[in-house]
Length: 229
Image (cartoon, rainbow, N blue to C red):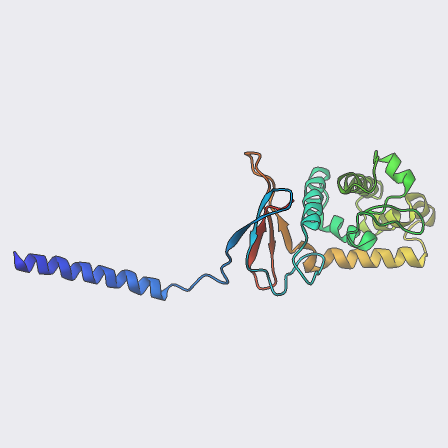
C-alpha cells in the first residue's frame, strides 16, 4: 500500500515538474499591454491600451498614436473604397496629397475637404457638405472611379484628371505639361506605392451592433486597440 502511494506521489511530482518546465521554456508575450477604462466628460466609457507605442507606425507618419478622428476617417475610406472597388491605399494617398487629412482644408482655388473637391465636382457627385468626411470621401472616390473608367484604368491619366480635370487631360492627349499636375501624379504614385500606406488597420463594426474596435500596429509590431470613434 505504501509503495503504491509513493508511486502516485512520484508521478504527481514528475507531472508538476513537466508543467513547470513547459512554463519556463515558453517565451513571454511580446510587450503585453493592459487595457484601461477611461470615463470621458460626457460620461462615455472608452477602453484603450495603457501602454502607448514609443514610435507608432501608420499611414500618416505621426509622432504619436493616430487620433480617433483619423481612425474614423480611415474606417470610412475602407468602407467606401470597398463599395467602389478601389484600393483603399490609393484613396489614402490622394487624401494625404490633397489635404494632409484635414477635413476643413480649403485651397486657393476653392477645393474643399479631405479629397479637395471643387464646388462643381461636389455638386456633380451629390456632395452637400464637402467638409463632412463621409460625404467628401464618398464624392471623391466616386469621382476617382469615374475617371478610372473614363481612362481605361490608366492610373497616371486618372490622377492627372483628378488634379487638372478630365477635359484638360483629353485635350492634351496625356498628362498635361502643367508642373503642378506632373508633380501631383508623381507624389500620389509615390505615396500609393509606399509600404506605410497600408500599415494601419481598422476593424469593421461587429455584427451585434456594439461600438467598433479600432486597431493599429506600432513600429515594434505591437497591436493596439481602442473603441473611441
